[in-house]
Length: 367
Image 1 (cartoon, rainbow, N blue to C red):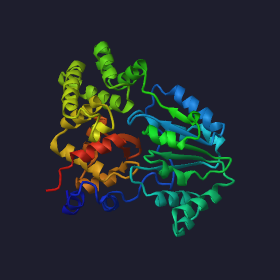
Image 2: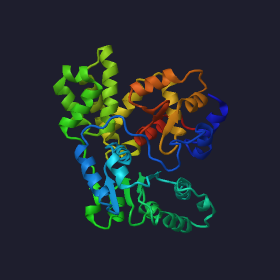
Image 3: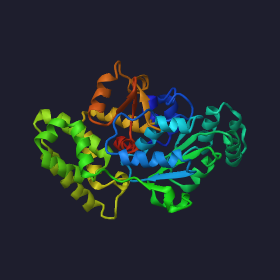
Image 4: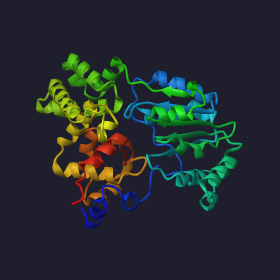
């Protein structure tokens, strides 16, 4: 990989703005402010989708989805953004913003302005002025406004600009953020983990032969992973591949339990770093998923984390350029097979925020 990119990445993502310019030539999605593509696999979320559709279709002004990292908040929000019934309820469309711990709020507001046909927000002198201009544009619109991955209550405030015909959907992993933003407790929708039955169904979809052969250990595995859809997808892909090498569910279970025990022994004060964002067993699972990659694959995965935009979407041309390979497809196929990348369209792929965090942790520290 070229020296320029190595130099930019050496600060562990400090120069993410520069790296993103190198890596992502045309950020996706292509239309400003549009939602990610429709998720390819949603299992066990029928009740959640129905309840949230009812809230939004009745134009409840604010709905906040709160839940653990990896529980599927962004997936649910993306599914709602593409729902035909909500398309009818909000004929002027959907505006989507993906935030982060340190978002560029002005740029996100300007993106919404461009989606509404104006560049005027770029000339606003303050964030408050840009927000007020956006409110004027939306006054007579019927739109669904989605702000994904909010880390601070004040980050969401500039996006509360919809008129009477608009509804706003916010997702956050943080209970404190949900409570601070919600006018009443009823405005918060707590997205639960999957039930054992639905979690097992998801695992079986991804690794049918393994689950059929080892039903009881498979049930133990979904319980160890606490019904988190992201973890189940990674585990399912891993089991599907490793079954051909003679590895069993019990092997993976033993590795996860021992790894979680060691992790908790090293970090008894709740969860730190990647483990701060999820349960110890899932942390170990993500580590195991990349330990099984060869050195080149692991390095390529790490670069995706360092140079990931928000949301983390990549196309083949981008990956070919940053990896400096003639054909990126073999690497992409392996990462998809391992559940570390998800195909979301023609030559387009995405990575979950937890996987982005894990990928960044694999990048060698600056010497």
